[in-house]
Length: 154
Image (cartoon, rainbow, N blue to C red; front, top):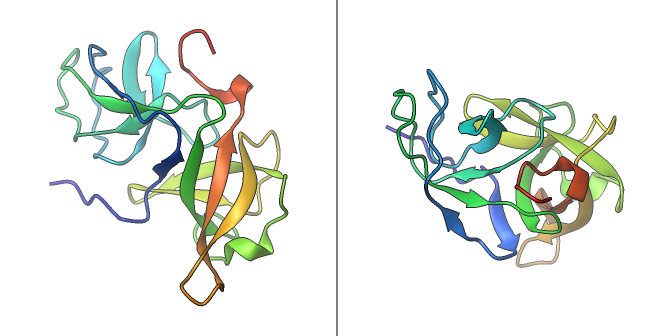
């Protein structure tokens, strides 16, 4: 059963189109809410710092070519991510540099922004998510760059 961790990325601003018709790559075990990438025309769980296709809408079946619906992430879409300082330690989003590009990482089916990894970052930090008191949280809003999308035509 999927963990569907509320900390996984969510489309904040964008089209949020669900795409059907792509099949799973061989031996996939991703869960709903995880980032996906294109693997030779099939859907596969994204690797750390990889190009991004979208967010899985259901758990992988583990069977090659099984339909794998996902929410497409297009260049310019804004996605809410949980922020870490090193890929695992929570960090306030306000500690990041606005306009800086950061990379994503996965650990235990949880996708995060690694605030310590700006080498060839795909996600531009645009603002922190604030709580009801106006204080920074562990979430930030990030925009995907055009060169970092696996969407056809991007």
